[in-house]
Length: 261
Length: 337
Image 1: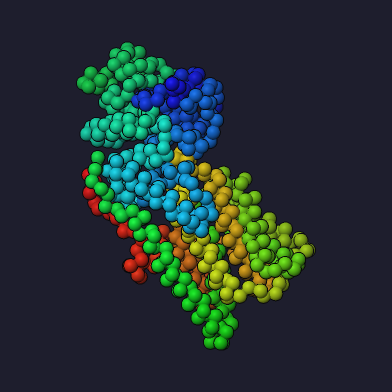
Image 2 (image 1 turned 45 degrees about the vertical axis):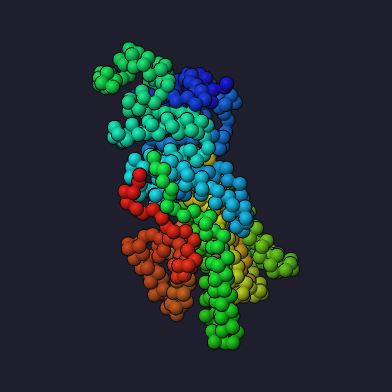
C-alpha cells in the first residue's frame, strides 16, 4: 500500500533563509503522525508546502503516490484538509454554513442551477444540509448550527475547524495545534475525538502540537523538527528517550514534563 | 459526544412548501405594485416627475444589488461600477440605435459586453486586495470614459441621444428579475463560497473554494446586471454622455450599498429606494441636497455603521409567519452536550 503522503528531500528557501531543509517524511494510511519542534522550526511551513500554499525549492511531495502540483483548493478537493494554528473560521457566517462551505468543492449544481433554483439545487442543498448537521452532531455543535461562528466559545471554535476540515471529505487531515488554549480535560477529550474520527473516517493524520501529553498519547510516530531539519523520528517512547531530542530541543522543563507524564 | 437527535428542523421538511406559497404572494405583490404605478401614471395621477423618480429607483436597485454581490457579498471593494453601467449603456445604444437591432437584443448585448468588461478587468486585478483593487477599478472607469470621449462613432464628448425605449414596465420587471437571480445566487453553495472569500480567503481556499474563479464570476455577474441597468438608463433618459459614468456615479452607487448594509440584498433595495426618494424630494435645493447626504453618511457611520439593514435580510415571513422556512434554532446558551 502506498503512503498517503510522502516528502522526499523537501526544502524551501525564503531569500537567504532555509526554512525547511531536506525533509523526508511519510504518513501511511490510517496513521497518526506527530510533528513537533520549537517555535520557528518550520512545522507550519511544512503544512503550507503540503497544502500547496508554497512551492518547494527542492525535493518532491507525493500524495497517494502521485506528485503534487495543484493549487490549494484543488488539493483540498483531492482530500487534503487542514486546520489553522490561529483559528480561521468564517466568523460572520453560521456554524452550519461554515461546514457547508467546505462541501462546496464537491457540489454538483452550477451557477445557473442556483440562479434558477432547479430541482437539482433543492435536492443537493437538502442532502448537504443533512450531512452537515450529522457532522456537527458528532462534535456536539448541532445546537449551535444557526449561531454565528465567531460567537462560539474558543474550544468549540477549534472543534468547528476540525468539523469543517472533515466536510472536505479528506484522506489526509493536517491539524495545526488543535489543543492550543485547551485545558487538560479538554485536551484529553480532544485526543479521544481525533482518534475515533480518524478511525471512522479512515484518515491519515499529521498533527503539529506543543502539548506533549496530546502528542505522546495520540501519535504512533513522531517527527522532531529543529531549524527546518528532521533531527529525530520514531514511536513516542523512542522520542521520549532520545537524548538528542531532549537536550537539543525539549530542554529540562520538557524533560520534567515527559517524566511526569 | 451528543447522541440525541438535533432539534434543528431540516430545511427539507418545509422546502417543498416554501417556494410556492411564498413565491405566489411575492409575485402577486409585484404585479400589484407594477399595475398600480402603471395605471396611476397613465391616468395622470402621478406626474412625469414622480414616474421618472420611480424608474430611476428601479435602475438604482439593479445597480445597488449587483454591486452588493461584488462588494458586500464577496468583499471586493470596487470603485468603478458605473464603468460597467456605461459599457452596457453604450453597447445597447450601438446595437439598437446604430445597428437597428431590437431593443431587448441591445439590452442583453450591452449586459454581455459589460460582463466581458468584468472578466477583462477582473482577471488581472483580482489578485489585488482591498484598496489596490479599488484603485484599479477606478482607473478602468476613467480609461473607458476617455475612450468614449474620443470615439466619434458614439458621439465623443457630446454622447448619444437614443429614443426612449425603456419605460416603467421594463425597469420594474428587470429590477425584480435581477434581485431574484442575485438573491438566489447568494443563497446557494456558490453564494456561500463567495461569502467565505469575504470572511477569510485563506480558509476558503483551504476548504476547496476556487477563490480566484469565484471572484471573477461574481465580477462578471455583477457587471452584467450593471450593464443591463446602464442600457435601461440610456434608453430612458433620451441622452447620455461619457461623464454620466464617471467616478462620482460609481461612488454614488457605493453609497446606496453601504447605506443599505453591505451584504444584505434587501438592504441594497432599501438603500436605493430611500436615497432616490430623498434625492427627488431635495431636487429643488441642489446645494442642501449634498449637505444632507454628507450629513446622512457621517451620522450613519457614527451610529449605524452596518447600514440600515446590516447584514440582515427582510423576508416575507416576518409579516406572514406562516411562510417561515426554517426555525432559527440554536441560541441556547450552554446547551452543548
